[in-house]
Length: 128
Image 1: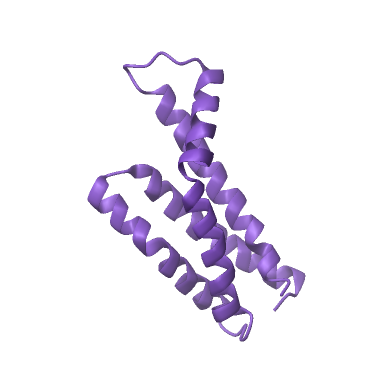
Image 2: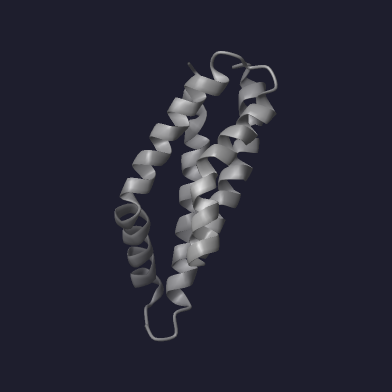
């Protein structure tokens, strides 16, 4: 069950990268003249409030897939984490292609990287 507590790595990594991307995107919009403080506030609001349903479903899906895939059998941990990443990222890959919203692509890539970091953390702490 301690493996579920390692999901903070995913949450922090995805939130941080999506937030930084939103700040840069807000600052580079030509028709708006935001300073850095306003850009941070706008990005924070859009990542938290606009993505509230995303964050709720992301956390629930992480916990459920951890319980189904990883907690019962910890053999082949990297493969199981990649499968978890693929299942959770599938809708966002589709939305990136269909709507050309690159913030989804940033989230997908950062989620993959944090899954690999999470594997190292699990193996290092001996949670397997």
